[in-house]
Length: 230
Image (tube, rainbow, N blue to C red):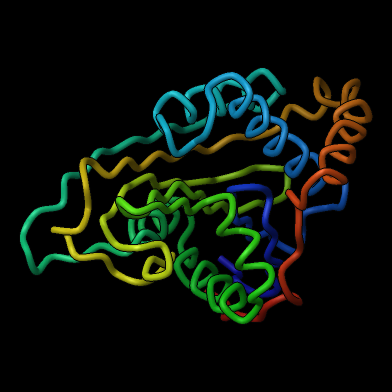
């Protein structure tokens, strides 16, 4: 897979890496669909940090109702053990995406490097995906690849750690003995049925524009990134 020139975007709690072949209308359909599904899940279930299984189920079902054809579903539950074993939140996401697209790990690595250089954007993304209090930190984030069609391949992770908020990042490994409870990993691939989506495209666009005025849900992070041909 050609890993050149993917652009990096934040859409709520999802970090998206978008191939250069994706058209502007396809890209906008992805943004609006994902944000709408997240907003509906928030309203119906509550915070993604409270019960991620229920939240994600509603999020996924809303994508289906918005004309996305789910082509692959994945879920896994891990219980880290052993005092010395470690897990970085990004690891299982990258592994699953690499299984879908050879070269995905390189694209994600480049994207996270870019995100790390944009403190303002990182802070906004963390406000959707990290939640901390005196007991520790809850993490619920998703990383996705977008290709022409449009098609999306996305993988998410949800976990809770006793580590304090300022100590937890996407890439920093966490010791297993700091992780509280199970680690939930969920993946999905989908393709948009453009013919079904077209009649409600404008209405959805107006709704997301109104929401964007209330809070920064959508943000491009940095310039396009280079990579290797694989």
